[in-house]
Image (cartoon, rainbow, N blue to C red; front, side, top):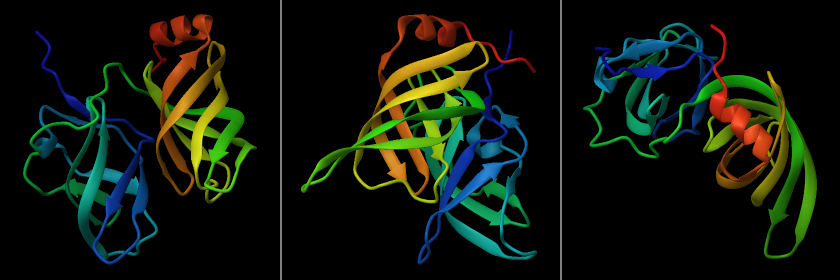
Length: 196
């Protein structure tokens, strides 16, 4: 009988929020797994810090089971979980996430108190499931106030066209849930098994 494991996929975007500084988005360089979050080995990440720099803060940890927040430490391009186990996984995914990157282009609907407008966007999907996606734009900062998107994602089997409701938006990252997915693409996404 297989033991369920918590997996942090390679290429995932993790966010470390340290007191008195801006949030740091880190990209994982290798996949790590463990039976429990507190047992995860150090996670190798892409960092701009020099040797010996230590940062401690709240880590938004994206795993195969969902997203949770724990205390984390970054030092020498290694990210470690140092806090107690969280009470539960937040934003649990009902579907398996697949790491990208997958090219994406689309249109963002921006709604502010003054106006409503459409803006073209491009980038890459960092991870996708049948529930939604995490996208990184080709610009350093997305326009404020994106409410929904119409996207065309280039997947291994062809294009996935979907309408996305925005859940969270920070700098060039945007997380959203699918409001509508083209039926053929939805079936292909549900059957998708990336090659290893």
